Image (cartoon, rainbow, N blue to C red; front, side):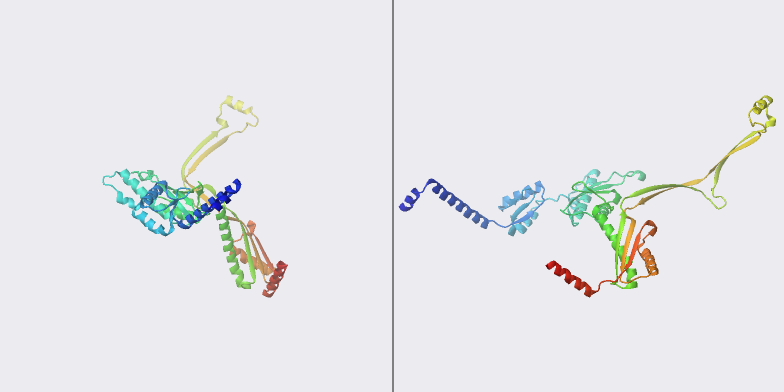
Length: 407
């Protein structure tokens, strides 16, 4: 000990400070690794909890003496992974977490003597809760919120206001709703509520973007266009395959499509009971006015004044004005042009065969019939006959390309 003390006393201040610092760091590192080795592996007990439910679960874990950790957003509770399932059962047994979207279980809480308004509100909450649960089971939807508006029924049926619904969807990251999915959700909500139609169901995402079942989203437009081109190519391929064989042709189709929604109104008046003999239809009224001028019965003074006018001699005339009214019907027609109209189509066909001009013309007619192309619209059909590469030639080409890549 004396030797150690002499050695310590012989050290300079900086050397003593360095030794003390290293000792502290060493003990801190040992303590850290010991704590880390004894710390349990954490697993998620619950996530996306409301503040009320999170506080209730934490209080229950504290009373029971279990370890837990809370995430930074205060919505996820972590517990030792080996205890996760047992603690979930404990929380469920104690009925700590209350469903924010109650459904038919609300019927168990119906009180005697409740007013009509309370019963209507309970029924509406049941519908909203059950629809929310169903929608949240759809892949890609993290959360959903359904709001129903069901106006009071009138004793006069023609004055009834139809119910409506609004649905907000919180989507999983990277999820994009397609048109058919939007349509399915609208039908799901509408068919679950009496008198509600899909047109009166409004859908939006958590960022306020409205969702429509029409083809107006960029991704849906691309999907629809590719689907149309592939289906049309299959129709053309079926025709050509019968003529030249399976591996002796290639078909490529490109379509220019209009995805704008257009609406036009046409008004037409149609004569009632019109026939070949009476194309104007049935006359319902007629009115005639006759105006007659006879020079011989004109007073002398008036006659002299009349004759002074150039060309006023022999001005006897008779004027008849007739107005006929026919019974007609009015036809109003509204035409809505759905998005996805083909404006132009280009079809390219390569054949492993040299064709004559007549054969090309006949094949063009077949392609027009199979694809629905319209040459007057500006559609283009190109048919080229050439010798296709054989399997051996393809292998040689692949080897050459491989050698080039290696060098």
